[in-house]
Length: 231
Image (cartoon, rainbow, N blue to C red):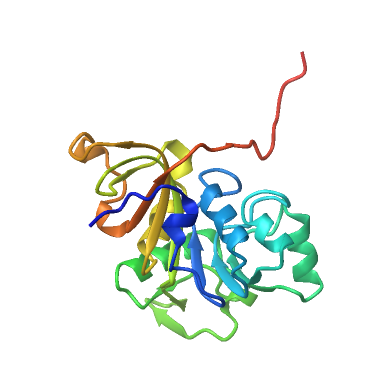
């Protein structure tokens, strides 16, 4: 199977449809699939639901799709750093399903592993638990969380080989592996593509079986919060 495409628009060709659920890797601006997000913006696909830790910032990352009103719902852990995200949520323009970060990561991983649901103590007794099944194990209450299976996954990695095996760089790994796993189709953007067999198998973070399409591109790599010491 040919996995390498010339650019983000080509890699997404035939995959986008209004109302679909997309799982997106990244944490803030770290490890976000910025090229694929921009291609979705340019495609004009609308009424989208995104499962992602947050929505970047106002003018970058998923924040761009909020500005163009292409997002109907977010399944997220964190609303901060994005004023438009907060404004749309508080005004009722955007649906929001809050999920604790660990729960969100596990919902993605579970969906990608064929596990329809799991029980967790996180969120018991809070709004997160409303409407969810509860079960007692060893005297402790747990709530049932459903695995996420997305129509499409978009992720960012540091390096890939021609078969789609991925290597992430440090904390940019974050939500990318579980997001990649849970998509029926996964498109990855990377900084470098190397020949098959040149990656040390012990250093591969995500097997290529999860990755269906692949692009190499140049990335902006913005710093979300720049903190420096006074001279």
